[in-house]
Image (tube, rainbow, N blue to C red):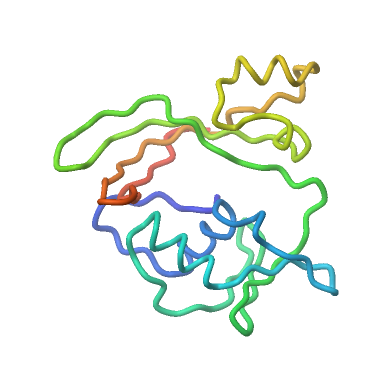
Length: 168
């Protein structure tokens, strides 16, 4: 996963946020290099982490692959391999509860779609609409995880303060 479970107050290191920013935030903002890798400006990563988590990256650096792809940091860019027809993951909120103090509890389904199907659908639209676009039901996006999370509303955005994958 691009983000490990955490609760409000847990201390996550910069690497956790960097991986999440590259994986979920700015995949499409990456550019291909002459060596056949993708690169993403570190500034995009910084903006994503500040916008969605309310914190700053203290130190940029390379990340080992672990269960995901490796990220190499060099000269203000993150580099990573290009995947052929890479799957896309996205989430849809299924339940949202106002718990006070500008905080909300939510549940969401995490979907995975093949690249071509992801490009064809509106990932923010209802799954019933996807069936009208993708005729072969075997290629519909699949729920690959369910999450519970807490978000906090700031003046101009929401930040994620707690994240827990509850099932796959």
